[in-house]
Length: 296
Image 1 (cartoon, rainbow, N blue to C red):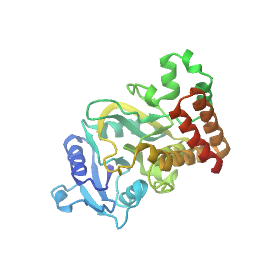
Image 2 (cartoon, helix red, strand yellow):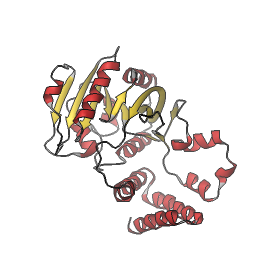
Image 3 (spheres, rainbow, N blue to C red):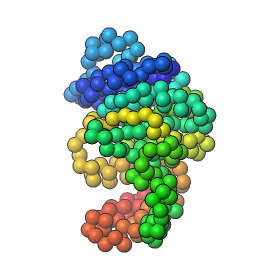
Image 4 (cartoon, rainbow, N blue to C red):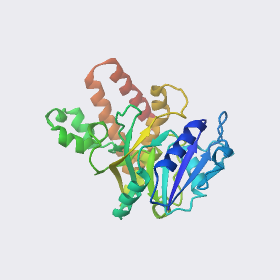
């Protein structure tokens, strides 16, 4: 059985649409849906909206627990041997849960699996990612990639360099559609999803923990899910969010995985590369990274 956990924060209509898409497209596999309202201050889940769906459990948190905490609350009610974290602003287009579960079962050392994610207009998102590394940063600094064939660059970097059209191992995957197992959660993650970060880079941290224990994050292109993106986030500018939360959490995740000195070295080389680009935006990025590293 797959326990599908969907955390709602101020998006009850999107959450209901997500649930309906799961009910519509998921077949030939046992599953349950656990909807967690993460103490939404304005638009809580309406429990009556789900009363006719016997496979849906609705849970209310007394406080906003963040992404990891909200999913951990749902995990307490999960009975499936597989656990799928599914963002509330997603819409299934096919039998993605069955496809993902079957692929997961084929690979004994798979720690987490995601599928192809697209925007409503069909444009790709990039859930298969590489960990920041000294090797990749040096390639950028010394312009080696100018002489690198696109096929090799795709394998090296994944992310936006990768067409997301073939199955592949990766270093981390988005938490948007994040399939794992209870046994992996228990044996590798300590019985729950680590909640060091309130928001952003949790998926990165979890995947790095999997890699450390010999489990592989994996991207499967055989199913496709629409992801609206950021529907429950506040309207703070992307730049402000990045330097306030996303980058510090990313640095912390890389430092946990590779060591703090190694993480600092990676971003120091990135600073050097940004400075060689000689434009105001990149100098600003270099300045922000340097200010962070001095105090890290």
